[in-house]
Length: 205
Image (tube, rainbow, N blue to C red; front, side, top):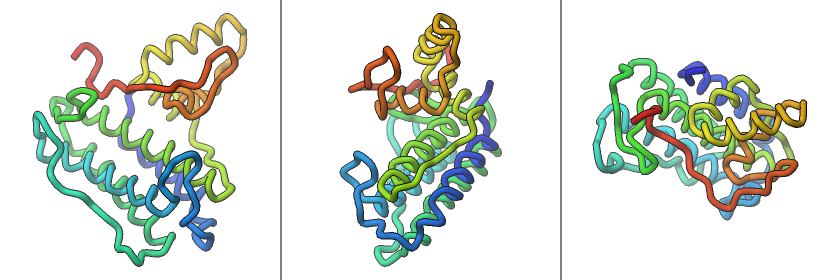
């Protein structure tokens, strides 16, 4: 059930394939329920994923590496989407070359390469979905990737939802479960979360 760089590549490809057809639309509209517009949400994804890569390279213990990545202010929607994808591919390449013993700072725990890959996947999928909602589209990510993200970053929620599925004799869609775990939606018999936190550190650390 480990989250890998391949999962991050799959998440990125899913989001880019969903959003690229909308590159000719107005990306100044709000991204779903966020305060950011679609353009700045895509820029945030690129900055965030490059930041995660920087953590794995520099390995600071108590802070983020002091830089910000930004798209050119005159970048088109297609170009800012390319910026977001580039950040993700750089993170995936960094995860592949980092040994399993590597740890680096994140506010939710000292993360290993798998943790940064998982957080990168969630940033990509959830903010990609925010952008898609703003543009009248939908993201349809690989469900096996979503299941691995739940198990790695939200183990308590994953166990809780598995119990619900067993009682109800019905599977909970991993993509819906991931959105619930990050406060995006409600589920049957589960209210929408107002606060949530993921587990960046490996289990037991």
